Length: 140
Image (cartoon, one colour):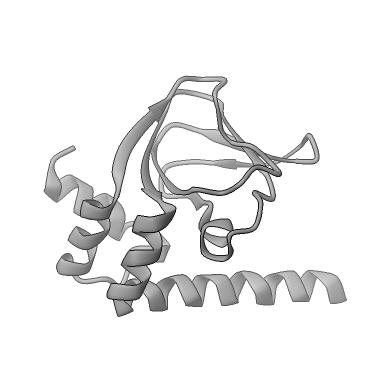
């Protein structure tokens, strides 16, 4: 993937939208593009987490307890919570079509958070937003 199109693709993802070109390049240099064929399990519920994924192309499906929850498409990501806290995966993610993703392994992802304040801030804001949404759903 050419760097300019990669930077544009990252910038279009909410998580990375406010980052500078330098910060976006740091994300790209930390990650590796991987592909999964249709039907492949990308992450398994209950397994040890080792990678954060950003879907670049294709469609995947999230399953919790064997039940389909939602579809993931280009720009969606998963794995950040388990990679940060070391807990097991909370869902299974399976490729519906061929999926191309940017994968950051746990060590690289955590290093990126330690060395890049902008990325760390964006991840923190995203996680806080998810926590607030979960709290709201419990009180409704």
